[in-house]
Image (cartoon, rainbow, N blue to C red):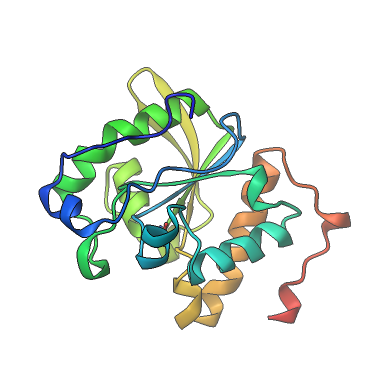
Length: 195
Ligand code: URA
């Protein structure tokens, strides 16, 4: 779609063997908010869409809490093919896929990028990131001659193991919606209390 989709890439031998398909980003090509995750998992590999498993439903909940729907935002990953056994992508795999992410960023030119977890945060900020500590921090990520306003977030899966991270995650997504100017929260109402 509009030069955003990768078709038939064979840069990573192991990922070519482990993937069922390439999982491209989804959402409007002119979205103001771009969420960047790590790599597809089993559900994403099966369905061909980022964040459709448990992490995806937490992301959907947080978007809803911020007055947004999944269809309002764009969601992509640093690496577009599922690593075997859900391992982290290697630095070579991240490097091989980097051009696709940079192209998506430059075509979209979003108001705000949200890095979901350690891998995408470190990949884009180009330094080590203590995501729990830095969640909610806003930084400018410089790529070539462009700069992208970026907010660091914990990964939605982190909320499954640590209740306090759930609050951090929901707050970060609500803050991101505000910063991108897309927040439609009903008088600031939040359903955080129900979790
Ligand atoms: N986790 C990610 O980082 N990306 C996905 O697409 C799904 C889970």
